[in-house]
Image 1: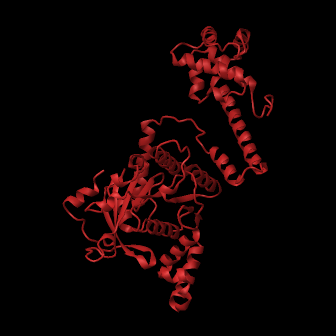
Image 2: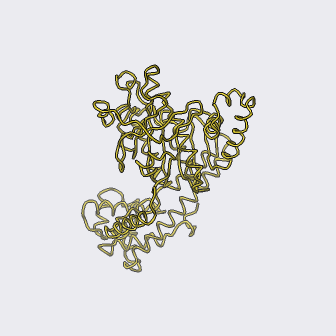
Image 3: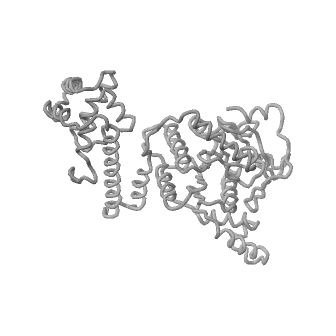
Length: 457
């Protein structure tokens, strides 16, 4: 890439914005408000000059030709910045200090072009590199990096924020009903108002409680609503075929054992329902990745890549403990924190809900009360902090097979919600179909110490 390629660089604009910042006392601040940084400059001497200006600004020293030369001399950067004569030349040749923001925008736009140029070149080179084992994944990851923050953060006036919120409330009044994405479970939807865009929802349970089945039921019911957009499922534990088998069992109310053993064809009614279920599921926009060992960056990269091709309505990750971590020298808590922060960021970037399943500590099984609480999440600090909603699944009959008070019941405990009231809702568990259904009537929550346990963080 040549520095004199005017489609990728503008040396004149770089010189003009530096000169304007020296002439106008407010010039540096005006350019900085536009988002201009030293890295945006293509010429090394210009990067050194802008860094020196930023150092002056940080110390509260006004930026002008004299203070800039003093700063460069004191830091030993004068020669790298082009020398004494070059600084004076920029002062003399700057056409106007009135157009600082316009010069800054040109410099930033050229910098963005260079980023695209280099990134696309690196993505191309991945396919030409014989040592690259998976060029598609590498290219996707590189392109996903271009989806990072490109605009400058800014403050919104309270009047604007209030107007938008009042408009939203008015729209909701004129269009009653759930605002968020419906799970298909009326009691849970009523509690949460549906799954909200940009939210990270953590669903935790001990093995055998049915967390994968719960998530798949939500996936199926969201997809059946034919809301525009794909439902993306990352299955880090089970194969895509196993998930498909479960979805067919749920959709057709077919015993899972019949599908697994292929004896479904020995039963005319089940075989007919299987065909009907398969036809219905084929029409749904559900996309499954069952590649084990994905890192959270790869999860994000793939999702953003899908978003470039089509809308994404919901993301489900099964499960948190199987996401590979980068930088093994860090503690497990730090690694989990990076995963949950990235998934929360992904929810905001995609503007859709992200559900991640999580395994709970074995300590749950050692307590008299087996109902999970927030502290049962492994390395729960970051999970609890980053999640907008935390739900736990509990089936009493799993622990008390002979004397269960609640046969066939799944208790969905909303232990944390930024917007909704916490508490429990109840589903019917039809294990032979891997199906969970809303109960038309449900048991009242237990009282006493058990109830307090739900709210224990």
